[in-house]
Amino acid sequence: MRIGYFASLFPYRESFEDTEFASRYPVGGVELWAYQLAHQMSKLGHEVIVFTTSADSKNHIEEKDGIAIYRYGTNFKIEKAFFSVDLLFKPLHHDIDIVHMHFALPPANLAGLFYAKVKRKPLIVTYHSDQIPGYGRLIRRVGLGLQDKFIVPEILSRARVIICNSVYYIPLSRFLPRYREKIIAIPPGMNADEYRVPYSKDECRQKLSLNEDDKIILFVGQLINYKSPDLIIKAMPAIVKKTPTARLAILGDGPLRGKLEHMVNDLRLTQTVTLAGAVSNEVKALYYKAADVFVLPSTTSGESFGFVLLEAAAAGLPIVVSSLETFRAFIRDGYNGLVAKLGDIDALAEAINRLLSDTALRQEMGEHAKASVRDYSWENTATKIEKIYEMALR
Image (cartoon, rainbow, N blue to C red; front, side):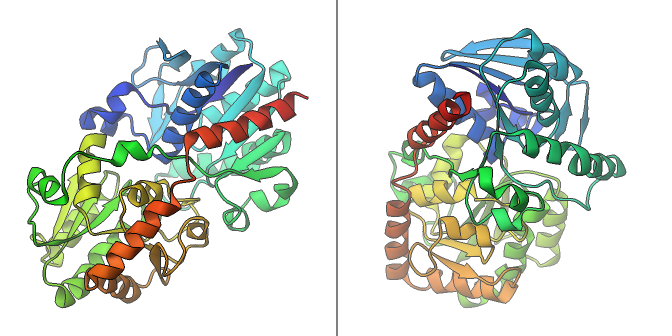
């Protein structure tokens, strides 16, 4: 089977090793989804072609692990979206059996739709989440309005199958409820070995220059509105009041970074909160091992699953999340984590303090979290999607 993946961004090797490069060509959960699925399909014996954008203005072709990656030069950017005219037309020179679009940022959305229509090929869409309206520059708001009105309905109407991360996300989406009959929920996978490090917790802290006696709260993710990292910072005064040794480490970069830095200064938390920025996978694994509690307080439907929850669980961390409906796909309140009322800073602080003050509870929930992630593998995810391809071709 010849599978063509359309993804607006697709990781380079440097994306996992070079933090400066990763800041110029950002990849997150959507891109990791695309990357892992392409590699698993190649392992299953399929011919895989990826159509994506380039980190520069030139076209590049990569052959890696049996995957052909066509990177088309970026002509311009709008915030995090990379636009390439060649991505729209040049894939038509290739023949594929299945068009699989990772719906997130443009322009891959339009390119995959265009290819499927011109070549009359079955279209499979992994719908990661709605694009959040109402913020950014005027050109983003206008472009998103046009996409939501004309392109999204056309894509979802034409798709043979729509894959989403969990059934809990469907009612939160502005678009998915009307296409329920062709939606299949398949969660992301997980490579747990990537988050096992050959060091003790104390050794990880030494490598990261963290105090051995501190209680470390960890956030990992892009610093963007819907992930709401500001809520944890605002909760820190109440957390530190009850747990004086509590410290917060925030890993990731994004447009909120400047605002968060000012907030840390205004709240006099410079000795308590660390904004570590984007880090390599190796350093991220050290932080997971060094931490005591993982927190993800996302507040809007831009969060369709929370891929980092699987990473934290693989590292054996108890987890605190907001009461966002989509987190129910993985978090069981009181079993592998605690759920705090959406947007409630006091509830967030209370849940974190409960874990920080109870070593036995942290250990129990951490063990349950690690057990919860055992069934999540990219091999399982790929096998389920392979069956969808076979069904679509029939």
